[in-house]
Image 1 (tube, rainbow, N blue to C red):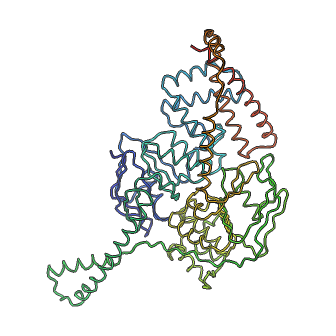
Image 2 (image 1 turned 180 degrees about the vertical axis):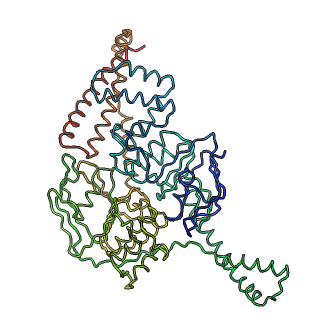
Image 3 (image 1 turned 90 degrees about the vertical axis):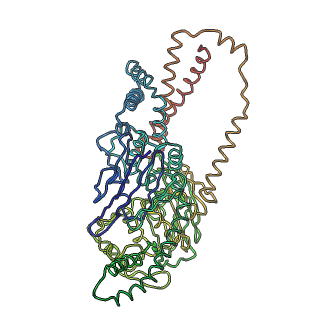
Length: 630
């Protein structure tokens, strides 16, 4: 059954045609990826379908029996709303019931007062009536997995990455029939990406997504739409199948162009000899000639961006970190860390958001100072630092001016020197695009321009902090080819597992609290090791023998009926244990976030100890009472 049907959509900006007369449909449960180069109209198409922009021509129709949600690259959320109000703003009765229940539970957690029985009882009765407990559990799981806490914090105080996660949570909680997702994995750490991948794979919702993450794309999608030279091409299957079929399509097209060119030569001779008096037959042949001419001039985007820059000569001494420590108040980033970097090292940095990966990179580049220890950099080392935050490109400058401000001429690795304009063209910026103002570039084009400004400095030690965000798959493939042959050192922070697997031979695993482990292998090998360890742990727990309580004790306990007071106590213990578990999770997230004063961290630590003690005693009492329950 069709959820959405688009027919003959066209969109242009001035003389630039993004797409022309494209048509497609989305069926119930279908999972489709939209693939194209940056700046060719992917996000614009999504905005049209979401009603944020208007197509020049064509139409689309959303089936009235289905609901659609849109997750843009940069979410537009109400800055005055709290996180809780924002994620639970769906408006249906079940969401309202969960919201009332969460607010009742939050009152207990925040005010540390006895249970407000009346308010909580009303909320719980409504949850019972709507059978919303499973839904509440799902909401809790989504918020926990995306590490969204401090639910009463205002949206306006959040970072861009936090807003993206809140917007993602809102979409998943709302349970629409169709979701348009524009780069959903941006600002997620690898653990979150893997959870989202599994969640969407199991979900029955229809999905159309733009993503640069090839593992994510390959494991979720069942169909790929490619936007190329303004036309839309459809491929059934995952990303691996797309690559194969795309190659076949391009080879077939080039063969047709070659045949058309050969035939065009014959027709051109006829056109030159044709008599001035045109018969109906000759007019028909003339029309065919112009059709043939258009076909013979057809071209395919070959995507030949070339990254080939000269690397500054590297001496024997690269970089040594000796007993380096760094902490922010009570958050420990590095604790007595030492490492000697060698030539051509390729290291991936892996760990949850907020554990210090970016700080580690800034220590190496001198943007931050260590609390203790020595960071000794070789005299020949030239860092090229592509930061997650990026640089603020001057919006009022043209693309070519951004480059010429750094260098008029750029030396390449083959002893060739190019002008700034020539270099930009090799980097995928055609001459007309070079005179576009930065403010008119897409997010991916700005990222590509930023990467260019890093490489222009001819670094021999490249540091890439989330370089894959907003770059299209074509640019990523070219970047990878360059990095594979790059002769210098490479440090990478990325949630793109394919990118990490291909480029990093070993990993620094940031485990938190200053602990960094060196793993010799790829990310996939590291994940396989963790899975094996988890299986072994589960097996060991399963095989543990727990001595059963004496039969006489069990019989005596069950023989006695529970009093009304004990039944009421058991009901309240269920609520109290749920509250304590939620409070524990929130405290652990606060301690791991790094946001807070020393006094805050001290208070949170004490509260966590107290919460764990209460959980233990409450659990014991619950077990004792539950044995008496009829």
